[in-house]
Length: 346
Ligand code: 2NL
Image (cartoon, rainbow, N blue to C red; front, side, top):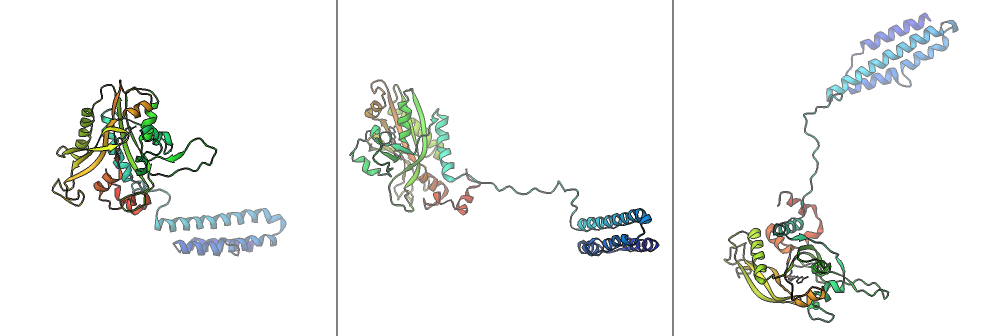
């Protein structure tokens, strides 16, 4: 017993004098004293030589010795950690971890630009299905089966087998949504219909088999071509500035009569003639016209009482011109190196 007391005193002295610091010294201390072959364990082994009547006292001494060694180790660990960084009190003045921010897709930016102008004129936004039946995409729009205009809008057909009465297809324009709005039978109608559309076309830098469109429709009593022009003048001024000039050229669409295409003076070269306007000074931006009476009738609207105008424009081309994008395929490749460039775009 006396031997044990002396031994523990010597060990305690040695521990108290242990002078190393840092992570490595703390670990060396742990191995030497607290490890499975360390001296604390070894001293505990002395218990078996202690006579029974002294075991209680020896147990207390050993326990106290073990706590002493453990607290020294804790102290060494703490001062080692403090050298690198004080982990007990975080520095709240340090900047936080940056949250990676996404950005709006350029198509989304351009669509928003277009629709927000019409929203200010009181147009509501309507969306409809991309998978559509033949009636809402073609027939109701004055394009019955075998109409030659269908050739220009070849699309993708869903093979639903022989058990369906309906020919499903991918819509070629968002007019389907406008037909659905008219079929609801609530007049007047003033809607703008943005969305993705499909054409069976060879993919290249200039054209894709899917792209985006915004179409507009206004139906009420006494809506005239003058209303159409004023609405589109407002749109052009908001979109391209007050100095941009506008011209209408007669055109043909099966669903409007009369029909026109609208050009603006080239906003790239200011009308002097560049590659964008192919030296003509004009850029075509949309097609429009008065809704054909057959289309109104197909939607149970009386063409004797109601008239309306409609227009349609693409989203990709104005986005390409605004952001200087030279390949339409970039929009749908989802390459972050491309998308990242629009973090500051509006
Ligand atoms: C273009 C031309 C146009 C329409 C779309 C339309 C819709 C209904 C009735 C009548 Cl429900 N017309 N839409 C009218 C004229 C032109 O789009 O070049 N789009 C890119």
